Image 1 (cartoon, rainbow, N blue to C red):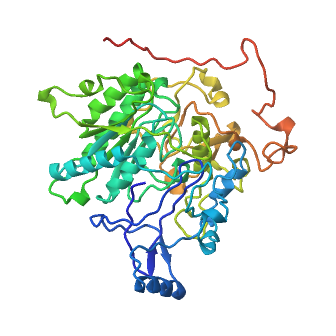
Image 2: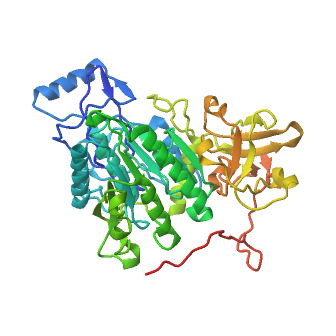
Image 3: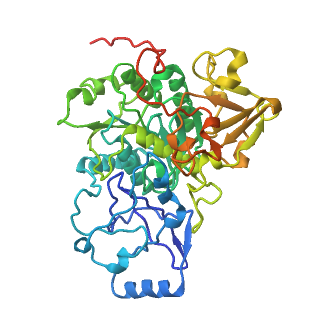
Length: 518
C-alpha cells in the first residue's frame, strides 16, 4: 500500500500492526530500494530475546539486505468480531494447501498465511501504474514548490477512492513526519464511525481497512448524525469548511521548514457526484484551493460514473484568484477480495469495531485491543447526571417531537445545529437507558474518562445501531437478551414481512435540488 519501512535496532524493534482480511485485497510485502524514505519510529515497540538477535545477525552475515520479523496478533482480539451476527466468517483465515506455501515454519505463525503462488478467489493488491506516476509527480512538485501538497480525491462510489487515499497517505509518510487526513464521506469514513466529519494527523502507515483503525483520536471532528450529506447540506459544508480552515491555520502556513516537516493534506470526498452532490464537491474544492486533484476515472464504465467533461474547467479559478490545481486522472479499480462487502456491511463493521475497542490497552503488545467477548448490552454503563454533566444540554438534529416527550423519543429537532466553530465531537455513545427519577443517562462508549470529562452536551443524530449492538452472546437465539426474558426486552421486534401503508418509516429530505445549466 505504498509504505516503506526502515530498519530499527535489535534491542527494540518497530512494531507495525498489519491487518489483511479477506474483505479486501491482500497486502504484499516486498524489499524496497527507496533510500530517501525518512526514518520513522513506531509508537509500538517489540523487544527481542537473544535467540532472535542471533538469528537476525546470522541472516545479515549471509548477505540478506531486507529482513522483517512476523509476530502473530491473535491476542489483539479482532478475530472475535466474527462471533457477532451479520459479520462475515473466516475473514482472517486463509488455508492454502502445500502447493501455495514454501515453508512450514512460516505457516505455523498464528494469523500469518504467506502465499507464494496463485490461490483461487484470492488476489493481492496491485498498484496501478497511473497511481504511482500521479503521486510521484505531485510529490516532486511539492518539493519544488516548498509548500505542502493539498490534495482532493474525487470520483463516483466503488471506484477505489478510499484505497487510493490510504495509498497516498502512505506514500506521503515516506517523505513527511505527519500527514493530515480530512474525511468528508460521512457514509464510508476511514478513521471514525459513520456519521462524522474529522481531521486527523497521521503519523504511522495505514495498513488495514477502516474497521481495523478506529482508535485514532482526531485533531478535530464534527457529528453530522446521518449517512449522507443530503440530510443537511448547509451544515455539512459548514463543518467541512471549519476543518479546512483549521488545517490552514495550524499546518499550511509553516515558514522555512524542512520538506519532512511540511504537513500535506489528503481530503477524501463522497461518491455522490450528480446534482447537489456535484455542487457540494465544487464547494469543497473551492474552499480548499488544492494544489492537486486526483480524479478516479475509467474509460470502460458508463459515462455517468465518471465526472463530467467540464470538471477541469469547473474547478479552474479565474486568473486573479490563484493558480489552477494539477489534475491527475487515475485509474479506477474494483478492489478484488474473497469476501465482498456492501456499504451497509462496511459501516456495521466500523461501528462494532469502534464500540468494542479497548483504548486503555490499544498499542500494548499481548493485551486485547478489542473485546468482543463482552457484548455491548452486558457492559456496565457510565451514569451521567444531565443536571451536572451537560452544561449545554441535549441537542437533536432530526424530526420534530414535543419538548415534553424528548426523553422518550430522543428524536427531536434543533434549528440550527451546533455551530462548528464553537463545538467539537469527541466520539459516539449509545444511550442504553434513561432514568428520569435520577435525571441520569446510562451511556455505553469506548471513550476514556479523560475524554468524557470534556463533554458538555449530547447530540442525537439519525444513525441506526448495528444489530450486534442489540444482542448478547446468544445472538438472539436464547430465551431473551442480557438475562431479561423476551417479554421484557424493549425496542426489539421479531415480526417480518409486514406490508401495507404505514409498514415502514417515511423518509424525507429537506433539500432543494436545483437543475444545473448546460
